[in-house]
Length: 121
Image (cartoon, rainbow, N blue to C red; front, side, top):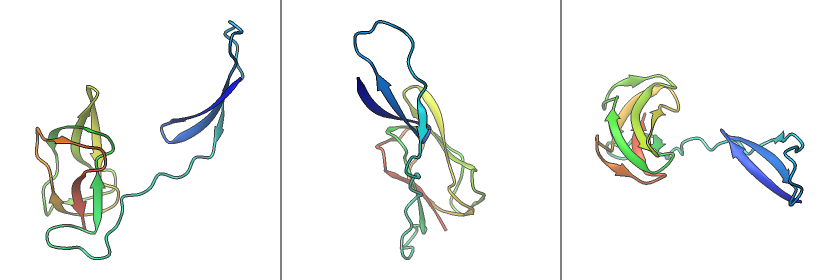
């Protein structure tokens, strides 16, 4: 038997797999408490056009569209950008209420995971 920890949508599951039995029955996976997702890091003080709250790319991909602009007031969960990754459109949302300080990408840009896409005040 082999033990694996699999994370799906932020919830970790401990899974045990038997080898060579050929049967389809397996015990149900029990959810395990996962470490909470890290919030967007906050800088001590905003510098220049950068805001205090950074919005990072969750995965590598291509920016399809920018839905917010600098100076726009946003609420937690408002869509800032659309990021295409693995032929899926992913909404990049505001982590908290605030004002958009900067948008660091434009439509068509390729980004790496963790790249700062925007910042909020």
